[in-house]
Image (cartoon, rainbow, N blue to C red; front, side, top):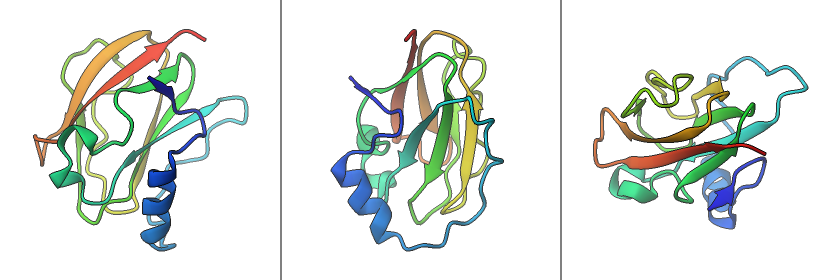
Length: 129
């Protein structure tokens, strides 16, 4: 398991850089005292299945802001499969370059999927620091 707090894999850095500089819509900036854990919907995610979100599972710490960014070329909508992590219900439609974030205050594990592309699945773990 890999912690996501500000760390992207080399693959994600290369893929994100290849997507250009059009930032698209963004979420409001979090308060400065909230750590941000970045998670990405990777380019070609529809064909990547469980690899659509990079490292698997996604692990962040309680109290961090989970920020989803769609660096793919098509729209996605991520939704939790259970209410075990109530802060993350759905991202809503994320256009290419779009972002959505949630402060995760509940410890636990939850699977999630894209409602548009159900083969895109992942697991999110929120653990105590």
